[in-house]
Amino acid sequence: MLDRDLTKLYDVIPTRLREQVKRNLKRFPKHFMFPLNQKEIKFMVSQNAIPSVQHLGGAIPLAFTEHGILMLANVLKTEKALKVSIRIIEIFVQMRALLSNSQEVLLTLERIGKRVDKHDEDFETVFGLFQKLLIQESNTRRIGFRRADEKE
Image (cartoon, rainbow, N blue to C red):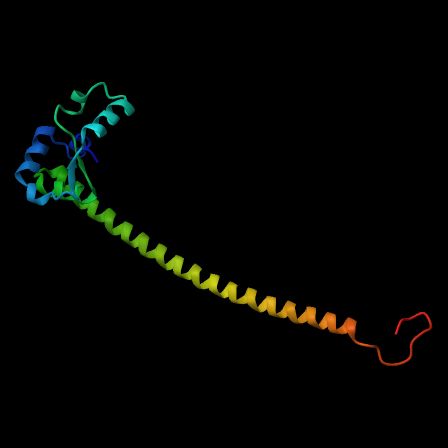
């Protein structure tokens, strides 16, 4: 998320947000937060109907990853930031639970798929044996008397 969007989420002014980031740079490694480059800024202006770069706040926009958003909630000292921080943690816990359940479902489906594959092999074996029996039956000579119109 961009810093300008996070200011609305945390109910702080952009200069306050950037100030806290600068004061706590050690808490924001590159995989938590990074500035947009000029190409990305131009793309945003052209694709999002933003009138100019100034509309982005006059400074180079900062992009925050999910970990950066949580860290930002921890360095901002507002009541809203505290509530958002708690909510983010709750959402991450729910996401992990969903992923765990999804993995269990995938494992179950994989086990069922293996059983079905085994059944397919069994059916192929049974059909193969039926075909052999049919071929053998057609190749064997009948025992006993025949009518005049039957072949031998």
